[in-house]
Image (cartoon, rainbow, N blue to C red; front, side, top):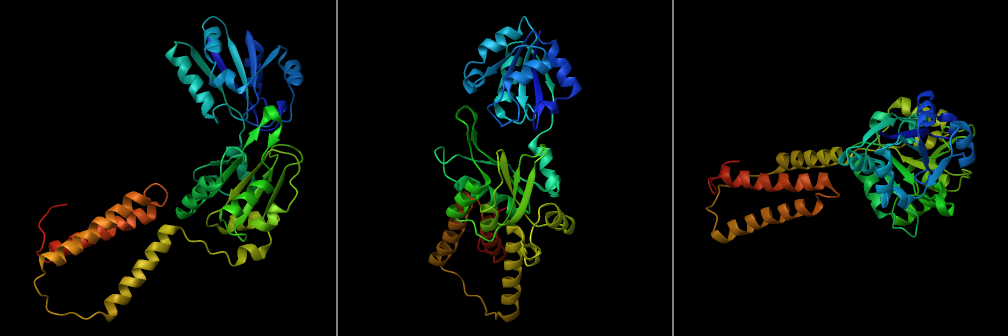
Length: 340
């Protein structure tokens, strides 16, 4: 028999595809997992639409007690209705893996998701980097989110920030709360941010502007999410002004360069300046002490590379380049002998 993961879609039960609805109606037992996102639907509506009794699953039912559902799927067709696209959450990937290890066939019915719907902002879906979730205050700090935004910016990419929720206790992180937490964590009040609410629903809302201004905007009911754009194509700029009411002055003087570009500009400028003004003197044989000092610099740059490689890859790469440059200089001067 089969374990069927059936995507409900982005907004409510009306986003169920014909394929998804047919599959749900054919299942022997039907569950619904609604804790990973906020949907504008209720269990009674799903019961009526699928013509089946739908049992609501709690987080622990899938994450800690999935053995029961896998066992049922060995002899029956089991369906799990999931908000958004059913493979957007790692919980469901784990369930597929567990089913496979137990010899249970799985079937996936895909649906609409925030990961594609976010293109409604007018930002190119191909320019989004790593997605990150802003935790509720009691679950953790905003610092990892800030690092993710900075990391994506360093590569010229947009950042989608999902906002945490606790459906079982009716708690939802809002765009306002998230932006204010990020400002407290160190993001500039003038940072361009796009606030999004209820995509896929008739009253969806998109608003772009300075972080401080967007933080004071009323986005209404959850779910909300945020986008921190990287460098913008002129069509993306036009979209933010037209579709997200972004004030033109916010975009006018915005000149974001990825960190790699900034580093390249900085070091090319510095090296050209030195090359133009430098003087040369006949070399003197270096002493053992001088060579040790030079090699100590190599070791320090390598240590910097190891330190920064997790969160500041451009800085780590630059540190390695410095170390290689010094070693190459020693080789060219005949002081060191090695092969790369």
